[in-house]
Length: 300
Figure 1: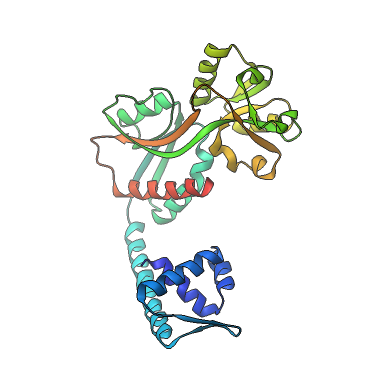
Figure 2: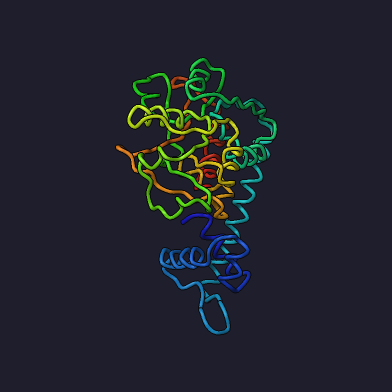
């Protein structure tokens, strides 16, 4: 049993409707229905009678709903008390990150700041190798890096955990003839003009591709990811990037289309976080990482 099930249960009881409860809580109706059903199985009682007149609590259900409300209130009291404690914590959180991730960090950082308003946050952007050095030299508490090639192989001074996994894909304008392709081969890619984001994993791929198949036609490279996507949207060129870029507005709206690239090995790309292995991090860093994982999960 978890607190979410009790919240779902009480909202259904309050609104007398699964659909209204799902709208109020911003979750699917099936999620709420399944949660209530699982709770009934777990407790061994029927909590609601479902009829044409609506959702009506059984006699046993009324007792369960009352207890659920008491637990929810106690849990809220606990959260309020803990927030009073966290509001008084001061300190700093120093993050080194590869360029281009700030957009993904905004929501987790906002959530973290609400819980720890007196923690100052410093963010430094750099390459993956420089981020690793920042962490090793204790310039930063944690680092966010792209994993490619053997960048962290055989390193015993840092601890690494994966946050996002994806694969390299080709991105083209919806008006490009390439939208009719299910896949693109290296030979076909050689015939295209590309704009590239100046990221570590992209540089590694281009170097690897050039050694195997020859040089690509590159219009320009840039640290401005929005400039790259704008060029693609306008049909000036195509680009390559990780599949976790799919949350971009142009991809959501259909202005840009993603296509798989055939390659001689899996084109996986990974984002992870690192910290110095023997350094004890403050507890609030763990909270930030949890917020970050939730934020990234919502983007994929």
